Image 1: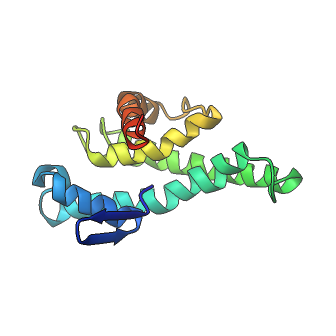
Image 2 (image 1 turned 30 degrees about the horizontal axis):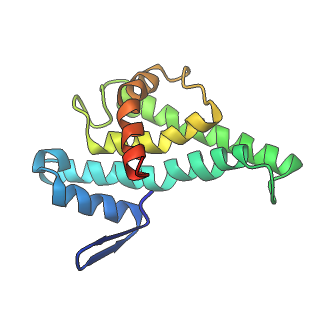
Length: 159
């Protein structure tokens, strides 16, 4: 996630605001969406990914599964992981049925920055060896973009 961005005199807080700013500044009209309908769809997907998807993947599932210390011990930790896994399954059900069952990519036939953003969130599931096989269209989509997602993560980390 991108919590803060400085671009000259422009200072922006919040992942979604930063992504929208960068998309408008560096992308083309076609990449950002044609007319209000295209833009609204992009903003809707980013809002969902930034809030629900990220929270369920990272905070509700991956972090409790990876970190055993602190307040997440014993029965509470087990229940948190169980809740998180169920929430991730529900999010992937939505991706599978609403978007990727009928499209190669989230917004249609062509890869879009939204695919990479959502892919970066889902890449956290690789840390816990998550099995995507229940969602064949989502799994196929993720395999297509995964290498590019990891290249972007490495570039961001300066590797």
